[in-house]
Length: 84
Image (cartoon, rainbow, N blue to C red):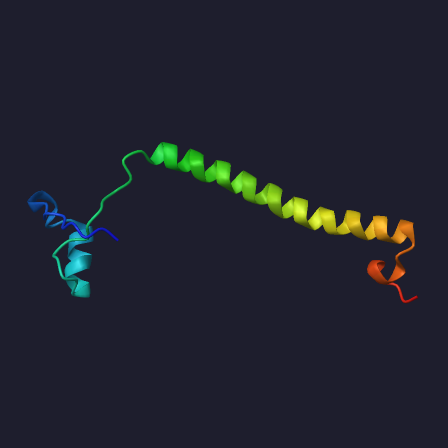
């Protein structure tokens, strides 16, 4: 967390975010930060990361099936889930 204080924005004092900050009793009458300056780029990045996540999940699930089939074909019955 940054130790530098963000000066209050007088133009945003009556914004919805600032009203929520005052209702919560925060130390400042506003929530430091702001809105995303480029929501389109953020949305593209989220879609890219979602595709990577889905690929990883599919890979993990399918690798379990592949390893089970290979274990069964090689005769490792205990690893394939069948008693010896």
